Length: 108
Image (cartoon, rainbow, N blue to C red; front, side, top):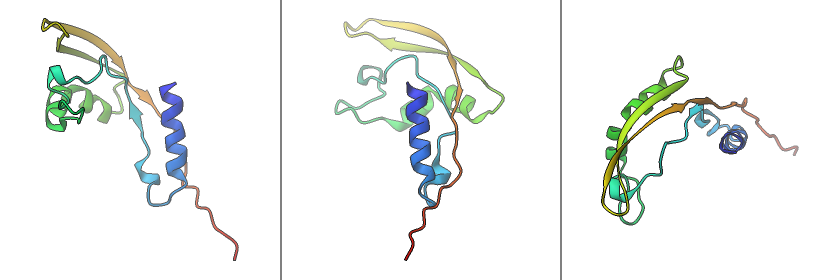
């Protein structure tokens, strides 16, 4: 389902000459939701980009490496009751279909 959504967005972006270069090339589904208890979000649900970039740098680097098809991660999680634990996951990196720029011209 996520792959279909990414490819729909890429198709929409291809229709705009200025945005067509912004198409998604590769993506992965995180092993968990971003969470305020783990410092990844503010209490108002805004992403703390610096913290996410530091915490998930191994995933970000794997997305930039076209040879990587998966990436292993080990991360600490805080549960709702305050306990912490370690989660390990092997995440698959998926390729998204990209579309050629589709310039629409209107007849005068």
